[in-house]
Amino acid sequence: MTNQSRKWVRVILGAAMLWTMAGCANRQKPSAMSGEAGIASESGESRDASSTKVYLETFDNGTNGWFDVLGVEPFPPKPLTLKNGAVESCSPWWVDFNHAPPGGGYLHLIMGLMTNPHWADAAKEAAGANKFVVGGFPKDFTNARLTIRSKGELDLRGAQVCLLVQGMVGEICAGWVLTGQPIKLTKDWSVQTITAVYDPKQWTALGSRHDRTDTYGVIDLKTILSDVNINLYIVLFPLDVVPNAKIQGDPHRLRAGVDYVADESKLPKGCIMIDSVKIEFP
Image (tube, rainbow, N blue to C red; front, side, top):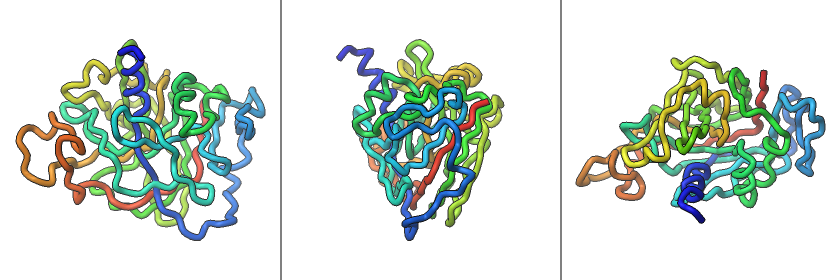
């Protein structure tokens, strides 16, 4: 594998986990999130090539491209936990330190989806056939509406559940988090919609930690939104990452979870479940 290929693996295959569910056997999903256009068949083929403006994943037949990560180099994907047709993720989550200050900050990667065919194929063993890529859905997320059915019991400790989009320009990967429209968790199932508007005031650039500037950086929001050519994630951001004991050196220059143990009392705790994800493109 070339150095460039290794860089792509490190960039593309980075992510984390999801919430605990009780008593949802034999439930029916609401009509608002089912029966939409652009649903791929179990074979992975799009039922209607003209209807690929609406992407829908209900997790009834697997994760279809969505994945979790191990949280260790080189950040390989792993299968998400499924329970009764929903994704479940619980703390503790891996701390993504790639964007530590002077970057935008630390985050937990809950679940991810590749938008790039090459990397969708690389993640196939863990994530299954990628319905987004197979269906030929757009990479231009400008003004796309993301609707999620979710529930959870989570002590956020200052973090929010947000959408992250990532794109590559040249050799630099740039990520933007939609912090202006967080997804609010409820104890019971609820449906919420956020819109990937081009409004820099609603987004936070992730940038890079001090020693990853050859891989990560800030590229203008308009460029990234118009071509989300790597992946998207549901994340917990920002995190209050501090060592659980006195250390030598700057904790932001060191790597949380590798060079020191982070204080878990400062990090989000609990569980999240996601039952369906719908993306409507303009």
